[in-house]
Image (tube, rainbow, N blue to C red; front, top):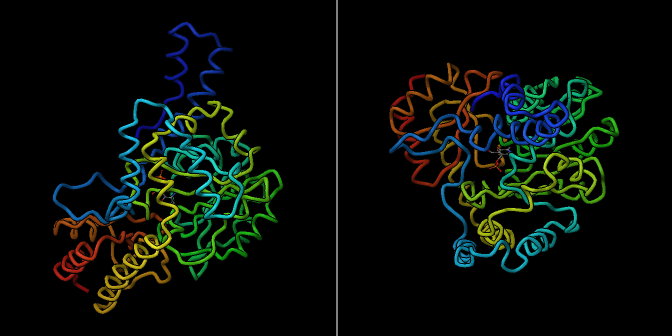
Length: 385
Ligand SMILES: Cc1ncc(COP(=O)(O)O)c(C=O)c1O
């Protein structure tokens, strides 16, 4: 993903006859909005391009696609693809999500995945004078947006239980514009207790925003932070259909937030992105969220596959970071993770990347039972203590 060359971008506009004043408008639209997305786009989370013929357990995707009943709903919309919005599909999605989450429909907004609002909230609330605070390791997309904005990005190590250390996060930058919590956390899969998330919401500066990224929450059988967005004006919850719902390539995400927050986040494009979503994805998501039994079954399947692989590693004396509640876990090889990743790839299994703070630790995504068996077989071949 190329870094944006702001000078070249400005020069191009001048060469094309834009005045400085007009340039400001274009920069607001493309520079602050779209360009931020280009440096933090949806593919950025992938450690590498998929390797042909390899088992793909490196990008935290689901091992299978949408629930069949949801895919059917999407196909129906393919056949009605001549209409921008055949039958109030957005409203149906918001009603379905509101019913599941117990929050008002007017606090729910849909996006082509959650990468866009994740970048956008940083653009709206961070700046060269108001930084961004995250855990470490954490999902790095917002680090890149912060760097691009020229905002200070402060990365605070997780606690010994691999939760976000909310008190240390506030102390590290008491006047930040954005505090970002990912729960379950990517890459550790670990939860931050709701009481800690609430504490940070109550103690951060009033005009800062707390972003709670719940991309992986459907894998966790327990409470979530959604309701915080129902009553507050300074909390944004991010959700995605790219994980448990198996829709990464279809692109659908959600934010839960007050209308005032949304207005701020859409000032660069007037809501164009959220108003023009593919109806196939919207219909697929609407049916997906209501499938309580199928969600439970897919979660149980993932947990069984994850625990089988973790038990296999531990039996060999390989350390696994404890406490994952999501479709990923971290393996501490006790030696450079990049070399282990390459050795496992040579056995046609593509695992995830490592984070600079933990150079000996790889993230492994949870695939199907067969895929996790292939991972265990690869470990048997390459592991030397
Ligand atoms: C924590 C987290 N947030 C957001 C995203 C963005 O995903 P998407 O744009 O597909 O919703 C990802 C993707 O891996 C993620 O891990």
